[in-house]
Length: 261
Image 1 (cartoon, one colour):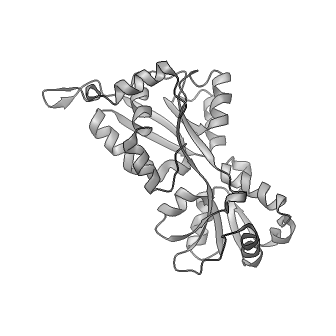
Image 2 (tube, helix red, strand yellow; image 1 turned 90 degrees about the vertical axis):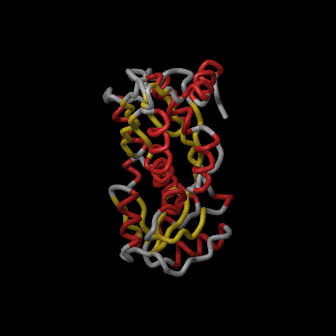
Image 3 (cartoon, one colour; image 1 turned 30 degrees about the vertical axis):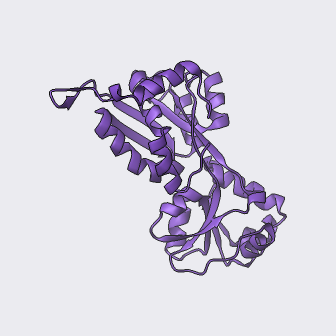
């Protein structure tokens, strides 16, 4: 895991016993931290952020967006303290002066998976050949419009072209403004098969997770956290980044379908 020495020291401090500063039974120096995060991390953060708030005394406001939308917000100088985007986009934002140089911490990675309506038959996608057959046999397919900047949506378009099946499935493919809307349509039974990050499908109560894409055609998105250069809560931001990259957070991430960076 990439941890520049100066920033690693701050993280170690955040995770030390001194992380909890209590006077008279109450936390002091609580800050309001605003996070812009890729939506794939929502299932894990729903569990983790309340733990952080309770232990630190800080309050976290989080906005979930596609990575493309997060970049647009930062380029418009929206107030925020932490941005969680892909590794390459983190590096790009550092070069643009939007993310503090050297503040990058790799949080988790996740691959693309397939979801179907709860209780529906699960196709065999154990190999590239069976995956292609399953997609070609499906009556309808859903995913988010890649123009929205969703990493899994962009990759699925690329993958179908690479496998030579894009033209054959075009008529039965429906794009939605967001991947969330696409998966909601699958959950309602309006479409048969949906594509999204595995972590989000695993967490959905009204979907069954068919499985991840076969290893030979899988693509992982590495999510990284960085301090927004204009943040006025950088110390609190370091504490939060330290928490979501800690062993405690890693266990939650794994349960939600993520893998180690």
